[in-house]
Amino acid sequence: MSSSQQNPEQRQRYGCLTALMLVVGVILLIPGVLCAILNAKMGAGAGGDPITMFVMMVALGGLGLIVFAITRK
Image 1 (cartoon, helix red, strand yellow):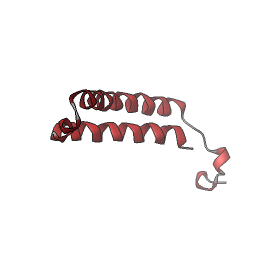
Image 2: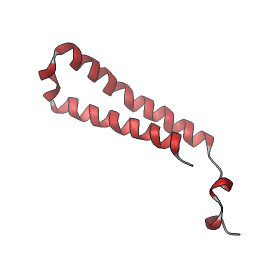
Image 3: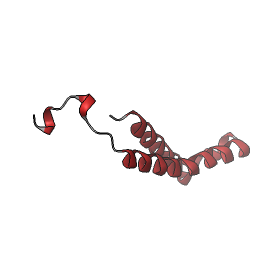
Image 4: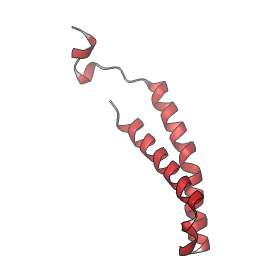
């Protein structure tokens, strides 16, 4: 049986890669959380800065990486 015909239960899950993805995802998530906290403190109009939007997109990518690391099989 070739590797492309294996059942999903037989595929090996790489623990180091999952841990690395989780760590990188958390690192990417931290600046976005801090930006969200600062925007909440400064008021509703403070979120229009392009750098803030970029940081929030990076944080969204970190969240996606965490979700992918947890749910991949």
